[in-house]
Length: 200
Image (cartoon, rainbow, N blue to C red; front, top):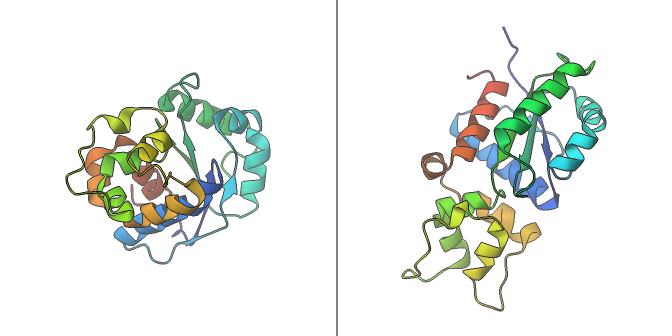
């Protein structure tokens, strides 16, 4: 039987993710009343290509935290491939290392950028940017690449999307029930987190 998780280490892609992902993970933990789980300082690994190339190095560093690891990346480059393939590759790479079994590790990938979740949930975007109530937004916008660009298109020309300042604030406003309804990537992320915490 797994011991209750007290700490969790996140590996993320970039600086914006390093501020926003802890916000999202804490919201999910609170939703499931896992208030005792503390997050370590997020670790930045870069994109999928860099993460695969330096997999052992990133994992070795992450294991120094001596707690379960949740590795979250985007698959927004059309040449990168599908998330299912990447999860399989990373899991196989994990088993092939001498680190296997030292800590529980889960992988979660967003098919597009993390910001595609904002476009799918939409209410957080509307309230944060105070978008006009009658602004019509294409229902397929969340499935397109360049989610950051799509968000900027919704804003006045003098106000573009700023990842390092806006991402965490919008994430704080996300409604998780809506996210679960509209985003398969979110559902995979939540399931991965709950598995690490022993709830699935």
